[in-house]
Length: 176
Image (cartoon, rainbow, N blue to C red; front, side):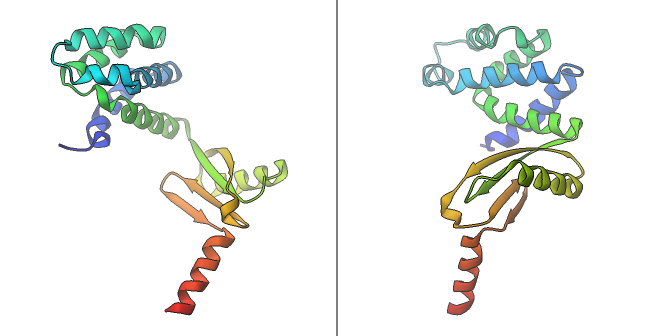
């Protein structure tokens, strides 16, 4: 069976096409639906042969609320009919990637050994925006294991400027 992200990709593209002009609401609705599917009580129902796809779709749509318009409810119904509801978390994540790409934004995670000042965050965001040619939203996290420096993750791009990685490279060179 293909992995969930492979299955979710065409559904996310279809959802993105259907959501024109309402990307934020669709994103919220898909994330709510994904949270419902991820709940252990609902997850147990996904493989239950006594629960119809229509009942599952209705349950998810009722909880996801007003963020899903008719096209969104139809998408949930199609996922239920095709027994693909477990792919909703991946679908929501892929939808957000398409939304960010269309809006020219990117979420970037910065792990640092010490808290970054506001000035450091602005400078880093500016440098990343020039390099990535997108508006950058930083999410800063502390990771004392880095010893010093920082590590930046922007999609597939990873910039590791941590002292830990530099020490590991030196140790590898000395033992090679």
